[in-house]
Length: 170
Image (cartoon, rainbow, N blue to C red):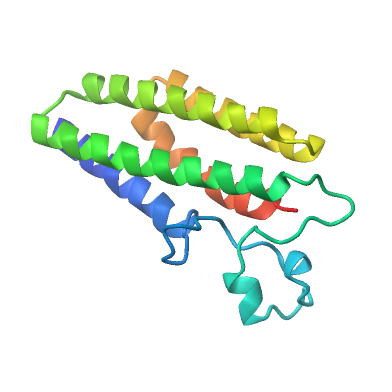
C-alpha cells in the first residue's frame, strides 16, 4: 500500500514538472514563458519568440524592477522543490516507508518550500507580485498542514505552476 502512495506522488510531481514548470530543456534558465504582451507579439497570434522567451524581459514602466527576478526565483524554487519531493518519494519507496512517514517528510519539505517562496515575496517590489507570491506560499503551507500532503500534491499543488506562469510576469 505505501509503495503505491509513493509511486502516485512521484507521478504527480513529475506531471507538475512536465506540464507547469517546463523549462524548455534549459537547466540554467528555468522560468515560464511570458504572455505575448511581454514579448511584443500580438495577443491573437503568438510568435515562436512568445513561446520560448522567458520572464527575463525588461520591466515596463508599470512594473517593479525586480519582478522578473522574483518570478524566475519562485519558478526555480517550485521546480527544485518538486524534484526534491520526487527524490524523497523514490527514497520512501526504497526504504519502504509507511504513508505516515512519507507524509511527515512531505510536510517538512513543503514547509521549507513555503518559507523559501515567502522570502521571495519579501523581495518583490511590485505589490501585485508580492501578493501573488505570498498567496503561493500560503497555499504550499496549506499542503503541509493537510491530513494527506500526498493527496494535496495531486489536487492542489498541480495548480500552482500554471497560475505562476499566467500571473507572475512583468
